[in-house]
Image (tube, rainbow, N blue to C red):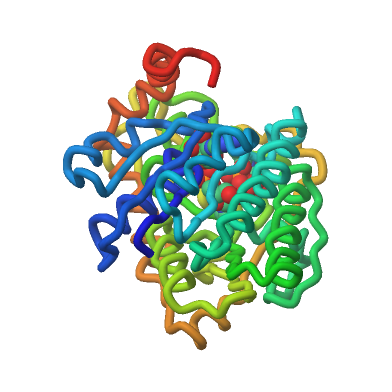
Length: 352
Ligand code: NAD
Ligand code: TYD
């Protein structure tokens, strides 16, 4: 990996991945971060990296749906490796408006694959970051393995499933060197507060309603974001080309339990001003249409074949996450006020 193209590097996992590569690993190459800066892409997540790592971190604002914008980057920056995070990532938004999900997640991935095919002689790896949601919903028992059949239920997961199939097809048809990872729900610093954990932390801090969908008993399998980053790096370094790897931390938890844990942790750090306990703010709301009941990952393959293990338990990871949000109120305020969005508009103009 000398010239690594990271797509979606200004989002939650992408920004953690770029920091991880530059600060915590043996990576010596150059990172080109290609990001459209949608509502979910925040330049503040990577502030200062250009100065700290001169020449090794470059940001390009571009849309993966525009072939004209992305194709020259492969040539100009002599890209040899791609790590593809860019996506519309929120299930609820995909239910309200699926169109952007089809464009970015399917057409955008297709465009990147086409660029990689065109510059095939330079490309050592195209790594595609995907989700366990492509497998659909589990009942009480069982785990998703790499051979579980795809059964996506939301426009988001269907668009990601489609992109996974395209990546796999480029391996089979064109022999493009690819790897795919399907990971469970991530949490940690810099996550946009539309997803459960940051939304609950931020609402609980300001003592506003904590919305829990349905009966709150849906189960997700949570992984601390840095553990996801270390798994991706390992797959990129040592994963077998053409293979998929499931990534998960064995941390199944009902949503309501997570919300209660966050309330209790925050009550201990900062007494609520308007309530006896933040648990009083929990409000059961109308369920999400097609809400998957349970996700759970069997990550035996990556553990056995590559020796990956998560470092954080749910308790230690959640504590680190809550502490990060407590210590980064400025980041929260900017995201909530849309301040960074106006900064983007000023810096780059509204259109791309
Ligand atoms: P995110 O929404 O926080 O970030 C997505 C990034 O992609 C943003 O920076 C956004 O600006 C950028 N982007 C969106 N559309 C773009 C386009 N057309 N062109 C260029 N850039 C564009 O998402 P995330 O949570 O960091 O997820 C990253 C990847 O990991 C996604 O592919 C997602 O499917 C996958 N994933 C996420 C989770 C999770 O729990 N968050 C779990 C497993 C897999
Ligand atoms: P989310 O963070 O949106 O991730 P995903 O839907 O990709 O798993 O949601 C995690 C779980 O939390 C999911 O079961 C939906 C639920 N949820 C709530 O109960 N309330 C909320 O406000 C949100 C955003 C999610």
